[in-house]
Image (cartoon, rainbow, N blue to C red; front, side, top):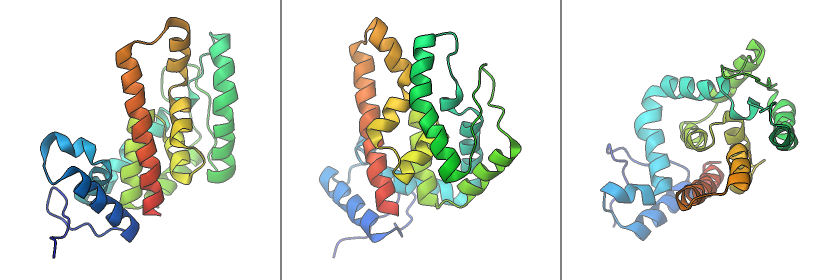
Length: 210
């Protein structure tokens, strides 16, 4: 009988069966080596992070995610660039409508460089929403926020409102706009491909933890 899977800190993977099956298959596919290969085992990494680091200190993770809301990426509209502003309006405002109708969260458009001046009621709703998330979900949201710089995009990805590709397009709208006008180098193209792949994996992960 094979040994049960453990996290890097030696904790058992007490997770939903579908996730455990996917992690097991991922581990078998990449072997049991440590080191750089950990980046080739994203489901195991996300799951282990939830167990080893998030469960013992949820407050730190919640505070980090709330800071993403304070600096919500889809609230920073470039008013001085009419073409970019039009694209942001067309693509980000439907997401804001979704957040209002589905999550009860209103978003404030930010015209400066500081934090977004969200109403306290919306900050409280975000806090309550995050507190209600499981450790596994928080791990996924942390991963998504680190890629998109947007709590709202990350929540929409978790909810299935956005696909991984759609999440990328919204999060990297300004960068893609600049690339369209000035071109894109090989390094940037490779980084974008990596981010798209990671967001697709997060989509799978969120499906597995439900």
